[in-house]
Length: 118
Length: 118
DNA sequence: TTGCTCCTCACGTCACGTGAGGTGGC
DNA sequence: TTGCTCCTCACGTCACGTGAGGTGGC
Figure 1 (tube, helix red, strand yellow):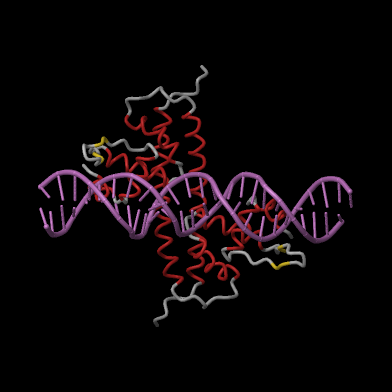
Figure 2 (cartoon, each protein chain N blue to C red):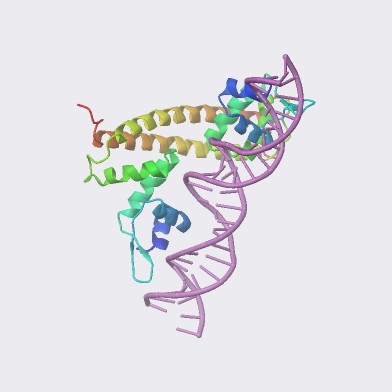
């Protein structure tokens, strides 16, 4: 499929999909004419990318993880497990922080004036 | 206190503290000589700012929330409660995404080769 | 030929970091 | 006078957005 369809199916903007290609996260083939051709499986890959970026991982690290998601290519990146373990701890702290922030927001909502009607 | 002490006590860089002033999140007074003078209470304010930024709120929204944290100044910002309610939902989704990401990382760590020793 | 989609620059944004070069108070 | 801290530009980065202007396939 071409970029427009991938954008529709993932909810990710065309511009952003091209950015991910540029960062080495997606590897579409080029058709004659220059159009990028994506695979079915790229839909799932994009969803994984979004999830991991949302968790605060940088694109360079995600690029190292994607071969493992294909599950054929293991044994190639020494040190990756250690980095991922550290990221897991960071994510645990993020989750705790988000719980705190949510509580703070709830307190503020109780304090803030309600909508102007009534 | 001056910016250096506030940086030490909050763990936030001097540059970033000046950025928060520029964005209207902190309001130090200026000493003769140009030095910014911060209050004791700014230590707590900076911690709140960090938590909220970490939860993905933009500085402009945080600026609207800070008066409520002081708890004297309510009743002044109609519509804020609604925005905060939407942010709460967003944070809930973020927490769910982070749980998913953590699970994905754990799977990858099991797949990834262990550290080179052994 | 007309739309629709795709392409490549190129510049803006937001929350940051990293200097360069100069000034103030003990 | 010597350090230390502070100041203001100013430019870089990273994950994005938003055009401008041109080309390809049905």
